[in-house]
Length: 153
Image (cartoon, rainbow, N blue to C red; front, top):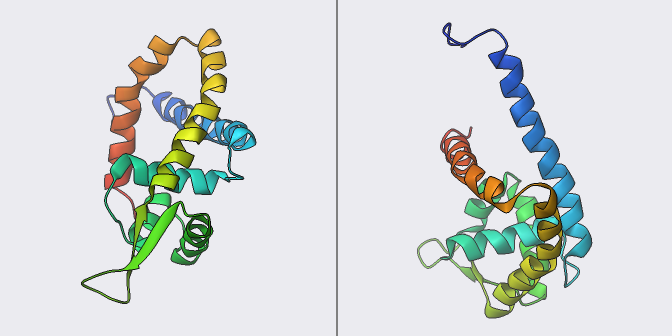
């Protein structure tokens, strides 16, 4: 539903806004994946980063939901991370059918190594787009992410 107080060009402008975010996500994801250490793929890094950022021991289903992928796809990603010693998977103490995932010290180190590998690209970007401008945009981006997280289907 469109707010009648908004000018008619607001809809297309909002589409452009999210289109730009999508393009940025795609381009940055490919650029990041090219420099990731430990033969990590973007999906692996995203899970390690998610676990490092939020902590705790989420279930496989919770991680899959957060990453917007199926439980089967997340099971495969977690298995690959577990083989490398980056996560530990244990049965849920309350529901033995469910699995809990914990970031290991090696996983945190791999995530930190990945962030360090990405840093030169970010610093290069900051030569064209100032770091203060990017930092100033964070509250808006966080607000949009929080809204979208809260209103997922």
